Structure formats: C-alpha cells, structure tokens
Length: 162
Image (cartoon, rainbow, N blue to C red):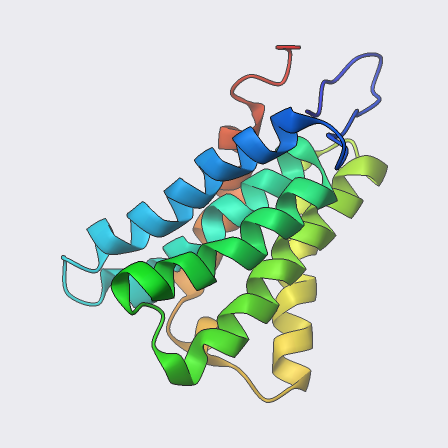
C-alpha cells in the first residue's frame, strides 16, 4: 500500500497477500465499469473505463499492483463479457500495463499524483502512437482527461490509512 509519510511512498510487494486482495478489488472495478458504461451507447469507448483502475492501482499501491491489475483485468473482462473485442485486446493489455506500471514507478519518484497521472497517460499514449494506435486520442480523449484528473482523486481517498 502506498502510505504517504514524510513525503515517501511505500508499495505493496509480491510477498504480501494484501497485494492480491487489493488487486482483486481493482480488477473488479476494471471489469464492472466497462460493463456498466457500455450500456449507455458508446460511453465506454469515450471514457476508457477498462484502464482507470489500472492507473489507480499504480498510483495508490505501486507498480506491482498496477501490473497485476492491468494484466488480469482485460483478460478476465474478455473471458466474462467478450470485451474488449478480440482484435483490440492486445492493445488494451499493452496500454493498461503501461498505465499501471508507469503510474506506479512515477508515483515513487514524483510527489504530485496529478502530475504522475499525466506522465503515465502521456507516456502510454506516446508509446501507443509510435506503434500506430491513436484510437484513445481520437475517440477517448475525454477518458484520458478523466484518468489524469480523477485517478489521483480516487488514489488519494485513503492514502493516510495504513
């Protein structure tokens, strides 16, 4: 868990059972949010909900939790709901992992979570763009803005809890 104490962040390690419990809750968020939002037209494509809790995981609990959440969420979502669609699941996994891991690594270096979220989102979109994937920028820019503005808010909800 990231606990802000004297400006330092502590992250969950692979040996702590709490990492897997927390990851499970965040994975559930990444699976349920798209299901709910896709009921409202193309809201899911615009708000990019499958990535949100991967970024929160990295910001709040470190890169390990970000990685687990980011890798398992799209696979479980596809298995349970057939979303994301087979042709794009690879992109979704890559971008989700980028957000969770970069968010977690940057959170350990930067003190401002909004700046950290911005770094993670911009880095992810730059890598995706270099690989020829511009879908999030063209269609999902409102979701990118929500990631930058709201993921830090959600990540801060209980930062002082140990």
